[in-house]
Length: 380
View (cartoon, rainbow, N blue to C red):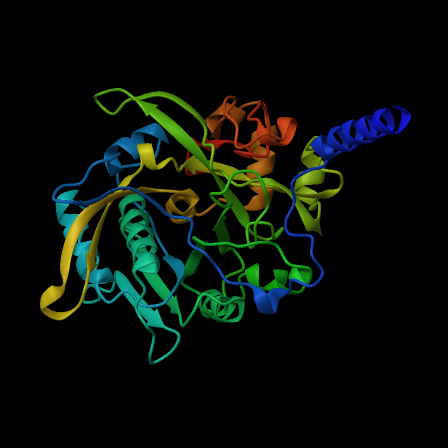
């Protein structure tokens, strides 16, 4: 009886202790950068439709208090593989929502392939369509640079990022992908600093698997974008916004707490990097219409799809940077700490992304599901 009671007590103590441990990345010393493979956290809610559904550009701009038009500089979108129809699909999207044309001819759209020969991939093509179409929808006067890495390996994705940050015209870099943290990730933080344009900001999806940290959102040089869910009226007006159950977040297993977070005094971070920083609509049920062409030759055909995921928030936050030119990690935390914080963010105070209690629950001020909250301005 004594042994059984001791075992029961030990199990209870271990369970209690695990509930207090923040959810970080894969703390596995054997897993390194060379093993990293980026995954685009995009989820299809409806597919192969003849007409778009989901929130419209006009609706999402009203929800987040964004201007109908505007934007300057270049938004760089980092993806893997090739989408041969990215420009033509964007043209269909623009006609549908009466947006300014964005083409190679008018120098609004540019695709840069990191290799002369890059294979197509249907999953990444959906991500690229989402990135291109909705970054342009939010900041229609900004230029779009789609940078295609040869594969989603860490080395190839970083090469694509290095190309984007080497350009003076790039003001925002969006990375709609992520993966488990790795033991040598601190060695790669310098890749998320603008080299040609020091004012460039980097944005990354926080992940769609619920509680847990992912890279590159875990880098202290990257604005990690978590996810929310919108409840809308039949007319598309916002009723409420809460945490999305798939939103990634937690405490990094490797990155130390950056100054902008320690100054803000995030609770229970334990001296480590807290994720995410901000949030945006990510629930596929309140998702976005995306036009995508699949197939090749005579079998090629396009259709509308309704998609979501935190990969929707990264390019749209990058577009917000292009609209206001002022968003940065330091400013985001200073603005949220100010007396007029509601001018900058909608504080998300309801919803969860798991069963880890404090670390999985939305709350006032900052939380490990939606960060500081969702945007209410372009000026930070």
